[in-house]
Amino acid sequence: MMMYHFTQDDFNVFQIDGLENRMAALIETTRPKLNHLGDYFADFLTTHTGETYYPHVAKHLRRTTNPPDDTWVAFSTSKRGYKMLPHFQIGLFSSHVFVLYGVIYESPEKARLADRLAEKKDIILSLDDFIMKKDHMKEACEKIEADTLAEGLRRLKNIKKGELLFGRIYKPDDNALTSDKAFLQEVEEVFMQLIELQ
Image (tube, rainbow, N blue to C red):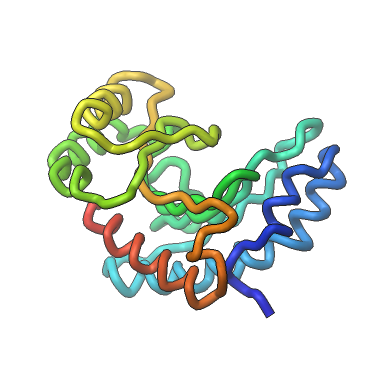
């Protein structure tokens, strides 16, 4: 039984038309994996950071018309939510799985967090095969380079809607998605590197 890794069935959920039908498939096919990943990696992050982490599985409750283009489990140090805090994420769009750490626009401390990330720029630039995202709601991502990182940090600090997340993405045929064991090992390795950005 597949408890943790995503398969083609999970990617196919996002091809289903209509909010009700897509949500039914998402709840049946993908959400159980997000719940399992939430339990597993909340414990993992708590163990490796010394802080208590809580999982927050996307429920998509505010949607009334448009079906979701992605879904996820996020991890933060608050039981009440994650959007206001730096947080970790595991989730997927129709095109890829993402494993991320960063800050989104809802955080009231974006400027301070941007300064903290700027102090870690050498670590960020050394992350091999990692990407950065400037909008967690879009599939687009870019390679981490000195100039794009500097621009991303400026945007995070100065633009109200600025966001910045770092991590890895995996296409449906990636070796990391061949088994639960492979995926858990991959996410553990990525999270261990992302923990250094805290």
